[in-house]
Amino acid sequence: MDDNETMGAMLARRGFGRRGLLKFAIAMTSSLALPPSVAPVMAASLARARRQSVIWLSFQECTGCLETLLRSPSPTISSLIFDFISLDYQETLMAAAGSAAEQTLREAVAAGKGEYLLAIDGSIPVRDGGVYSMTGGRSNVSMLETIAADAKAVLAIGTCAAFGGIPKAYPNPTGAVAVEDLVAGKPVVNIPGCPPVPEVLSGVLAYFISFGALPALDDRRRPLAYFGTTIHDQCYRRPFYDQGKFAKSFDDDGARQGWCLFELGCKGPTTHNACASLKWNGGTSFPVESGHGCIGCSEPDFWDAGSFYTPLAGATLPGWRNAAIAASVGLVGGAAAALSGRRKTAPKPEKTP
Image (cartoon, rainbow, N blue to C red; front, side, top):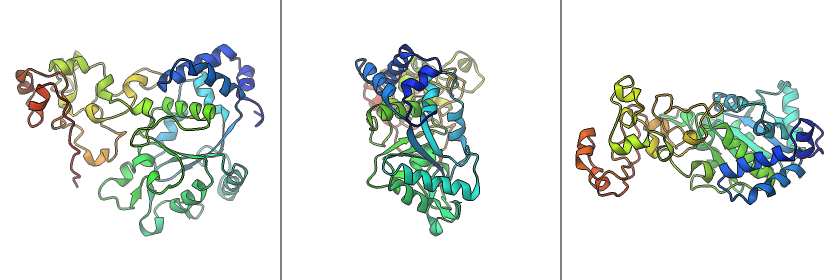
């Protein structure tokens, strides 16, 4: 694809006409919680847009975030949105290696100065001068400081980049920190998840390419449209929660009937993400639907919170007004407030070794 070719022309070459682009825009505006009237505007903007330069740096990570994004459903316009960006550097995907790869990075930064998006997966170790993760003889700290300075915006992809993730977990031997802890003066959007939902990145990219800005964010810099509600609020098992019907083990009758997994440690009530609505593998399923409770991977310090199979203490209990229900599941502490119809939010778990 020629860098000067518009997205509309590229899609037309691949058999997607104006109607297909409009359908994609409708899906994106819907997922971004934008008014329906915005869809034609997004479609027109995408049709006129040219390739967006993206420089992707991988720091202290496991490659899981990149792997999940490479496995988005295809062929669809949603996957073609990734073809439309100019991925000018990504060390895992590019053919070049060594000094040739480093030269490519320098050229990409110089050519797109002030206009490229900087994508980061992985946390950044800062202890001992950042020696615990280096590329081409440079520490992650040094690379982030230099390359973020000329970026138009920064995308922290995955929980490690967004909040420090597993490398930051106690006792954090490398001094790992999140992208937002080091980047100042630049727009930063966090797309957490271990790994993140691929369609969330699609939506953020579509919005940025269309309007030249980032979508609305919550107080943790996450796209509000995808992280504005909890897994619990969208979960198909929620009616069983409200009825006090809980699986007691992963293979009992309640589990077989799809009852709530709260007592088996599901962190859905305190976890903000779109897993329950967008799901995974082309909308096939998500962990709770597959029979395992949410582990809260899109929240800060989720690994230190741990206790993945221990119920939340004093979790949200909207609508529970029958004391017998609370007694039947052994809830204490926050139950009284919950039974009066008020929402009680779970306290932040203490960090444990």
